[in-house]
Structures are given as structure tokens and as C-alpha cells.
Image 1 (cartoon, rainbow, N blue to C red):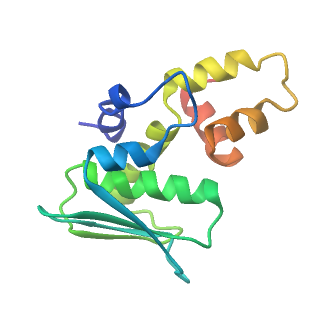
Image 2 (cartoon, one colour):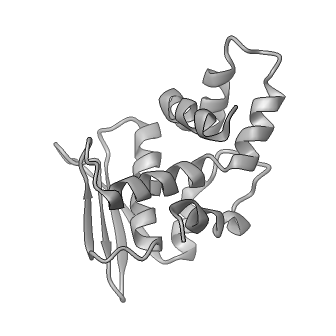
Image 3 (spheres, helix red, strand yellow):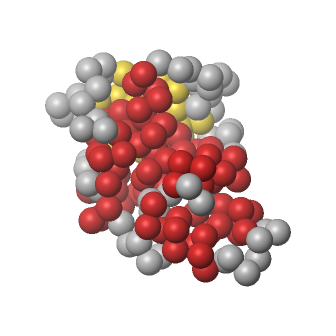
Length: 152
């Protein structure tokens, strides 16, 4: 199954009419504990075992990046990745990291939600990326990448 398919399986737990996607209820539903730490060089880590799943996020990065990191690490937990410990360092390009990024993008910016918002703010082309990114609580660069993926 593709990373986006794992994310889409979670859509039934997401209120598609009330952006942004709320991550905490998803984490709770799957028994994932979330903590914030004062990391220097790591955006986040995930620990996955049969008994416990934990995500720890760098509290010093911007909130939009925190949300993406949480979704990324959640992807490591949800998808059948083999490792028990994942650390998210900026710039890593391994296949598992790319898969977690695709999962995070699909989870935070579900295609139906993005399409609806993009259409809703069509009359404001000058600020549309900024407005939609703020509604979704993602960075403008993440939204632009998602828009390209969706052909919008």
C-alpha cells in the first residue's frame, strides 16, 4: 500500500468540513503519546513497540513544522516500517523518510479538503496560498508542493 493510502484510511476519523486536521484525537485513537522536548538538531522522533508508541517533537521549531513533524512521525508508526525508533533530521532522503513525508502531506492536507478550500478562495488569487495554508495550519511551501501534486 502507498503512504497516501495509509493516510486516506484515517480520513474516516477526520472532520473534513472543519480544517485544520486535528492531530491529537488521531494520536489518542491509536494510543500514541505526544511529548515536546528542547532538541537542538532533531525535529522529532518516534518510538514504536507492541506496547507503546511515542512521538517527541522539538518545541523550538515553528508550529506548522511541529504539525508536519507529528504527522510524519505518526506515519512511521502507522505504516509497516521495520525500525522501532525513528529520528527526523532535516534533509534526510531515505525511502522511509520520503514515505513518511507523503503520509504527512496527505494527512494534513487531504485532497478533498484542499480542493474545496482552493475553490472557496479562488476570488482571492493574490493571497490564496497564504489564506489556505493558514486555515490548514501548514507552511506555504508545503501547501505549494501539495497543490502541484494535486494539479491545482
